[in-house]
Length: 269
Length: 297
Image (cartoon, rainbow over all chains, first blue to last red; front, side, top):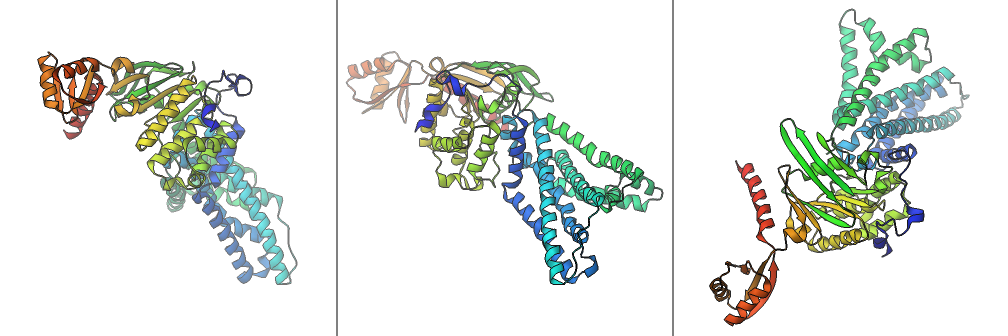
């Protein structure tokens, strides 16, 4: 067994294996990103989340094609339906990437291999967004197929127009919800608590602001579900962007900041 | 290769680690001994940058752990064999580490073979692993980046006697090639056969340290004979302090001296061996006993 003899002394084989002692401490970012992407998909939880998301989207589209108004079965209309489950499930993907190191204690390995935890957090954030965009792209393709089949079956003309503003708005909105999931995961570092909080807190906020007089104005600036409405409808105008920015700051910026600080300072045990 | 200077960690007013200083030179295995909760793991976490120390400093290969370039290729770390995602296979856990450290995938097969996990076992989810298999997986992860230093927390925990023997050979071999090993244990006998140096910690403080030879190899011996009672009497008569135990007679003289007394007394000795000086074992038992008393109180 040659492996046992390959162990430490660098002096024995200095040329190829000599350790790089120069350069930036830690691990190159590309490697961290690749690992975090892989971690999102290599467990049952991650895989099933993808399968369930895809399944719900397919069921929704098929149901709409069968029972929906034929006039509404345009590509844009179907896309809107297919992305509904994504809004619910992508944040959970974000939460899971952030919390796994604590709920499964793999942080002991991850942060021993890369002690610069901020870089791991960034890699998780980017990995979640990359995967999220991949899911959206896959959904767009699947919906295109459904539209083609559906129109053919019902002998209707295909309608492919999706305004660029709507498409970009949809992608941006999904990314926002995904990053919010990562941020909530980082704050709580506990999967169930983070999921419940990310579902409950915005809802409670919406209810409170709709019940209390005078809070509608506040809600217009801070309610994430309200400010993303024009985004997904492709009707963003001047002040909508300001609304989006303030709401994103409160629901993403703040938890992301607090969460990152927690990860950087928390003891890994 | 590991330097720990006056390392201290306080939680509120409690000092979990209090002014710990020791070093692990190249080519040696240092056993880090102490009862559970003595602060061993905290020292190791501070050493590997997972816990910030309150004061003091720990360096590996002359640097703070955080300042190492690609630390996984310099230092092999296993702090808790159970800290693996139960839903991943052993091979997948190692593949993730290999991708992070930047070693080829073939290295995963190398270390799996090194620790004796079969392809079939490596393909199973960690959830189904025994503690011994998790320890082997953890060791595989530590060896993955062909490191110069190993930091292992309780690596023998859960291994069967053969496994412990195998691990000793593995670590001895690693050290003999110039590596440095720091391994912790709460059981003296686990490290006795492999460690060159011993650091004993109790309640966050170092209570004993030195080479294994100094601390363990004493002047005592233990013998079994056809008549232990008569042997003990003969030894007492010769002016030694002998103790009759179920495992034979323990006496505070070299085996040769014991043999001479037995010869003179005409007693057939069936087993004669050096017996570790009571010092370290007693110290260790006292530490453990102190803690168990506290738990009881």
